[in-house]
Length: 443
Image (cartoon, rainbow, N blue to C red):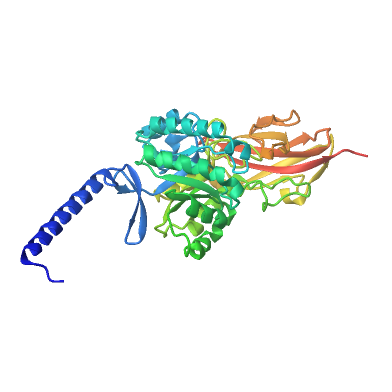
């Protein structure tokens, strides 16, 4: 079609006007969008980056609720929590130590249908979390929101109310706090959950709690990128826990590494299996930055009850800061009970004398004291959940000593027990080791 001359000018003006509007809109988007956001996910030239205050931010983190000053001194920059307990105190402490916080929002498991099918309960949780988001969204220490822990995203349509509640939280946070991204935590590289999460939900980052399967993480990521190639972080990693796959005694007591072995395991996993070269990878949080009972009171605890440091703290300081490792921690070679190791399925006679011994390496410095303690095996489960309260040491052995060997009398009651040695050096650091054994009553 041929236009009259007067229409060429009109079209030119219209095009020029549209160009101006487009430029102005682009400027407004730059002003009102990511350019003003505190934390956001950026994708440029096919590579992802977590941007905080205008700069790329790589997470050197720990999962826990405390010891912010130690985390800062160790070269860490992020604390990850599971819920909002004492959130104001945690955020303020993090800010005082120039740390950021991944704030966890507790979410019931998807199969708790009595909750998700109850609109009153679901609405209350939504309202409560909306208040939390509005209260803390301007806090300078806030890095991102994390909905749920080890969430499973099911296929079955009978769980549609779970998705309705979950997506309602996601939409609320995106609307009320566009300044911070949202993540959710999966257990291991769960392909089925990733598929449902990507198809049915709208989060910004996927997080993984991953332990022994970290050695296949690179392969999993590479194989599945045909479907999902978005950003991710490791919300928990560390040593293997008291669960399936960990070595056990004949009676089912899990074998715990000593603290020196734990530090070595963390070093290996960070150096060999952490996908630091991947631009999709936003960082990781070591578990557990604190003291807790899970299987035993020493299994995951990087600190003792008074705040003393175990060797893994020193290992992470070296990894995070890039500085040479200092041998400031007691170093355990091995522990024996009646000259046997933990793997030997030790059976002891009730009410009989036994001897435990610890062998140390000289690198750990001078020993100040050794705390010898005897506990019943922690097998308590409530609703299939492990006990979280430290057990009371038994009277047969609960003392401080400077000796690497101790003799004690086994309990009268038949059953599983565990003997612990906690070794402190003059620098205030500690090491741990323990051996499970089973007491058999005489015929």
